[in-house]
Amino acid sequence: MPTGSLVMFYRSTPEQRLTTMGIVERCRRMSDIGGIASAIGKRSVYALADVEEMVKESGTILIINFRLIAHLPREIPLEELVNSNVFNKRPPQSIMNLGEDSYLALKGLYGQK
Image 1 (tube, rainbow, N blue to C red):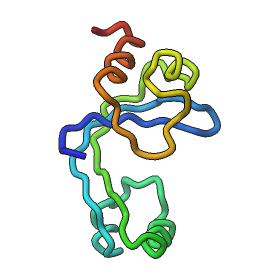
Image 2 (cartoon, helix red, strand yellow; image 1 turned 90 degrees about the horizontal axis):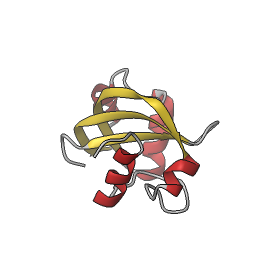
Image 3 (tube, helix red, strand yellow; image 1 turned 180 degrees about the vertical axis):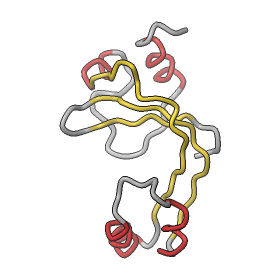
Image 4 (cartoon, rainbow, N blue to C red; image 1 turned 90 degrees about the vertical axis):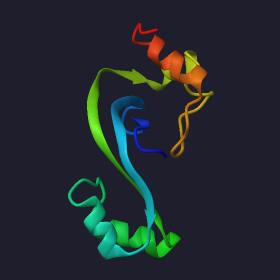
């Protein structure tokens, strides 16, 4: 994921909604726990013990440092995202890339062209 990419956060529980927007500052794969701890600092939603477990299971983890742009003034529910063709029939299961058509549909939900 290149620096400057727009990143959107989808909350799957308890409510299925698009909630937050940010800009990627740096993206990399790492396996060294000390380096990971330094890279994420206090900016992770995971406890360091959870990160260590992820590294044990997969060997490396993807770290995406991003700058928060905003929490969306209106969170967008899954049904609306699917009906507007932002998502195809189901919510994302992992990191996904939105094509231009999906991005334009998302912008349209906010009345932007």
